[in-house]
Image (cartoon, rainbow, N blue to C red; front, side, top):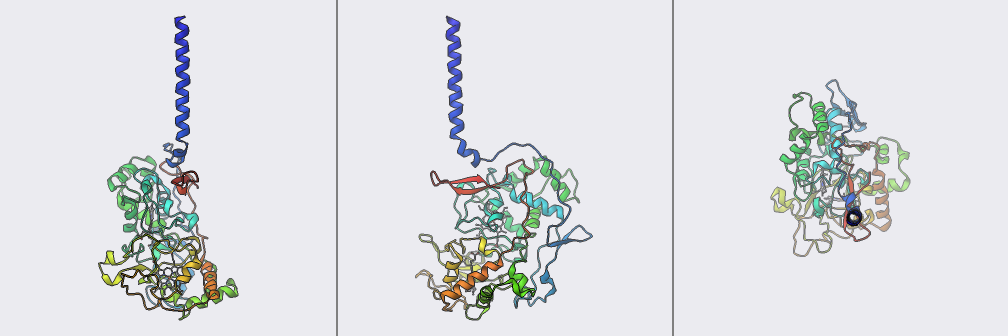
Length: 421
Ligand code: HEC
Ligand code: HEC
C-alpha cells in the first residue's frame, strides 16, 4: 500500500512538473523570437580574399573604388555641376578581409549590450538600409528622436547624421554602439565579448595581419572593419546613372520631364540634392515639420553651437529614396509624393510660430502643378540601384542567429523583434 501511494505521488509530481514546463514554454513562445538563439556552436567562417563589386584590388591587397564617374572632372569637392561630373573621394583602401569582417559585424547582434540588436536591425538591406519606421527603436524598445537614414554610398559623405555632427565613419559607428538608447554597449564589454569568441579572434587576426595573432582585438579594428563594409555599399548604377553616362533610352519621357523639373531653377532641387550623389553635403534649413506632439528639433544648431543653423539638417542623398519611406529626419512624410509636395506649399509654411528660422534661399514658392509633382516622383524612382547588394551572412561568427527585425505584434500592438533573414 505504502509503495503504491509513493508511486502515485511520484506519478502526480511528474505530471505537475510536465504541465508547469509546458505552460512555461508556451508562455515564452513569444520571447523565443525576441531573445536570440544563444547557442555557441562555432561554424568555420573564412573571410573573402576578393573585393566587392565596384572595387579593384591593388598589389597592396587594398580595394580601390572604380566607377564610371571617375572619368569626369570634379567641379569641386562636393561634386557640383552637371550630370557628368565627378564624385568626391570614397573611403576606400581597405582589404577584402576587413570589408568582409565588417559585413559579419554589421549583422551580428552580439555587438549590442544584450545581444538583441545589430546595425542591420535599423539599417536593413531589404529596406534601403533604413528601417521603415518614422523614428528608430533601440535596445529595450526605446524610441529614438530621428529616423534611420539609408547608408548606401556613406563612404562618400563628409558629414554624417541628420545634423552633420560626425565627419568620419569610425566615429559615427561608435555612436550607436555605445549610445544607451541604441545598442547600449560599453567599449570594455564589447571588447570582452568579442575577445571571448574564438571565431572572432581568428577573423580579426586575418583582417589585421600586421599585429601578433595572440594580441587582443582592439576597438579601432572593430570600427575600421565596420567602416570598410559601409564604404563598400555603392549605389551608382541606377537607370538615372545609365542616362547620365549617355544611354538616353534608360529614362522614359515622363522621367526625363521629372529630371528637368528637378534640375530647373524653378524647383531648385538639384541646387541642394546635387548629382551625382544627390547631395551637396551642406547643412540647409528647409523648415520641415515634426509630427504632431513632437517638440521642435533644433538639428545642426546643437553640434555646431551656432544659432544660425537652428532647424538645419544635412541635405540627404536621394539615392534609393524609393526604398526608405517614411521621409525627413522625423519620418513625418509617408510617401515621396507628400515629401515633394512640401516644397511647393510655401516657404516656411510648416515652421512653428515661435521659431525664427533662417530658411535657405533655394526654398521658395515654385508653385509646381500636381502633374509636375508626379513627374518629380517618377524621376526620384529612377535613382534606385541595389545591384551591389552585399550578401547577408547565413551564419555569424558569434553563433547568434541572424538579426531580427522590429515588427508590431498583431496581438498586443507592442514591438517585437522577429527573425526575418
Ligand atoms: C536603434 C537603431 C540603430 C542602430 C542599432 C544603428 N543605427 Fe545607425 N542610425 C540610426 C539613426 C536613427 C540614425 C540617425 C541619427 C541622427 O542623425 O541623429 C543613424 C545614422 C547612421 C549613419 C549616418 C548616415 C548618414 O547619412 O548620415 C550611419 C553611417 C549609421 N547610422 C551606421 C550604423 C552602424 C555602423 C551601426 C552599428 C554599429 C548602426 N548605425 C546602428 C539608427 C540606428
Ligand atoms: C535648400 C536645400 C534643399 C532644396 C532646394 C531641396 N531640398 Fe530636399 N532636402 C533638403 C534637406 C536639408 C532635407 C532633410 C530635411 C529634414 O530632414 O528635415 C531634404 C529632404 C528631402 C527628401 C527626403 C529625404 C529622406 O531621406 O527622407 C526628399 C525626397 C527631398 N528632399 C526631395 C527634394 C526635391 C524633390 C526638391 C525640389 C523640389 C528638394 N528636395 C529641394 C534640402 C533641400
